[in-house]
Amino acid sequence: MSASAAVFAILVALLLGAMIPGPSFVLVARNAISLSRGDGLSTALGMGIGGIFFGGVALAGLYTLLVAVEWLYIGLKVAGGLYLLYIASKIWRGAARPIEMDRADAAQGRSARKSFWIGLTTQLSNPKTAIWYGSIFAALLPQHPPVWCYFVLPPLVFAVEFGWYTVVALCFSSRRPREIYLRAKTWIDRIAAGAIAALGLRLIVGAGKVGI
Image 1 (tube, rainbow, N blue to C red):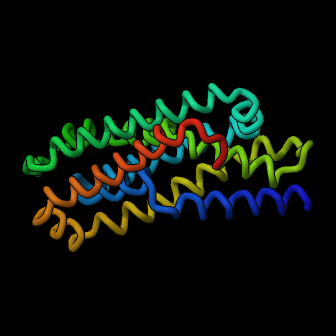
Image 2: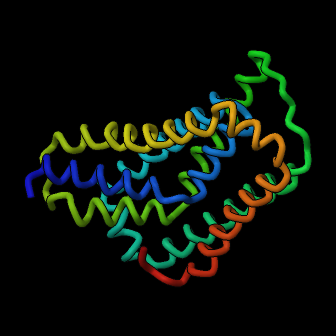
Image 3: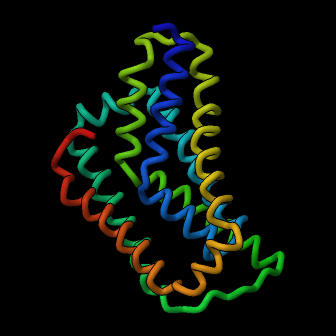
């Protein structure tokens, strides 16, 4: 397989992985519906930046490192699971609170920054994403890729991650989904919190199992 074909295959595999519903999808959709389109896009941007990080460390051989150092992989899974449980608890506690429909520019700026950091930290806290990136790169990228791959892949990875979650944010921030959310906010938030908590518990319970 040529380097160009390998890069294309990696991008397709990463897109398919991003499309599988998980904590990233839940958070982008929830922020787009419950807060604003800008918050959804800010969360998507955080996911994209996280993708650049994972793409970079995958190029540096993260998969080989985590397989060789099992305790590091286990530690990442437990830490990631605990963080997801923390996010889930915050969503659950705020489920019954009414949405403040303040759209002042300053409030939007603060909210967008917070959404960005939540998106970034959620992406970085998931070791499954790290292993997915590492295994895809290890399986498809040539053992000695040309130098241009190191410059081209990170921005392309960002385009895939940010592009997909931008689509999610735009779809879920339209008027109809927002109206549905406001009518059923408590239950929707609790379902989202439950889904994220289940993913966190799954990471912790399966911490001793090395593999994807």
